[in-house]
Figure 1 (cartoon, rainbow, N blue to C red):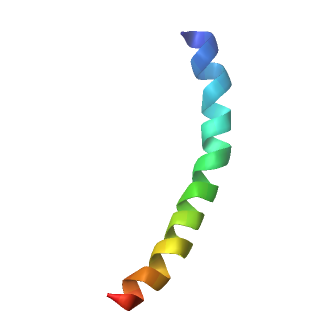
Figure 2 (tube, helix red, strand yellow; figure 1 turned 90 degrees about the vertical axis):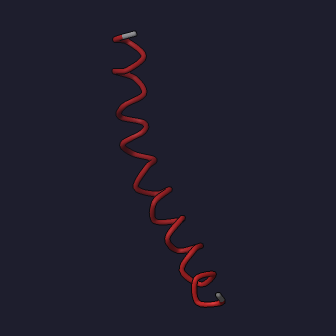
Length: 34
């Protein structure tokens, strides 16, 4: 379990900011439509 956490956390930390940015970029125009 420790090995999995140690391997996945850096990956998640690297990916989550991109997901958050993409989500906001995609949802912002939609919010303007409604």
